[in-house]
Amino acid sequence: QKEVEQDPGPLSVPEGAIVSLNCTYSNSAFQYFMWYRQYSRKGPELLMYTYSSGNKEDGRFTAQVDKSSKYISLFIRDSQPSDSATYLCALKWLSGGYQKVTFGTGTKLQVIP
Amino acid sequence: DAMVIQNPRYQVTQFGKPVTLSCSQTLNHNVMYWYQQKSSQAPKLLFHYYDKDFNNEADTPDNFQSRRPNTSFCFLDIRSPGLGDAAMYLCATSSALGNEQFFGPGTRLTVL
Image (tube, rainbow over all chains, first blue to last red; front, top):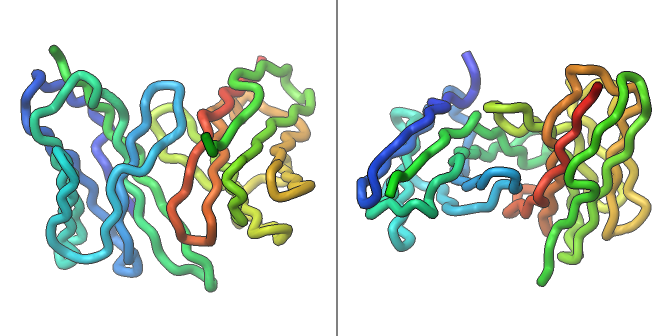
């Protein structure tokens, strides 16, 4: 079993839809939870960062963490064609004195005008 | 603008021919990372530098080496590329271990 599971998609939605992107994880040592967005032929960029269970909102984006279920989500409201990208969850944990990051495989999202 | 720059953006090499990928940063960050990302896969950390301290991931093949001559530059050397090394190579930096990582645009390596 992989430490982090993420459905690779692709996920196609019409413009204006609410998008739900999810990751599950198996390691209770993960302490911090992040979402990165990666446009085609670009490096990932950090979208959201959270460390506690519950919701964190930033504009059209909401990150949700459920530590008891080991489940994290990213919701995108009023999705736009410019949101078309691959979304990677990333989980941070302490290993050998270092904080390490484990990425999910990414979900490719296409928002259709 | 402060940024992470990778050169070249696309690199083609022949099987077994050494290749060097370059990363530079204007963020003055202490930590620099190299990741390998294959199609539809998660970025896989190869190694990182904390200042001059080099940290190799346990499963990084010996074929991959890195140099960091100064704070701004970091190089990835692939001594004898195989077909399985074709991938996107991402450089990232952070101000400290565990802090937000800033990624470069990547170098796409093709091995013929």
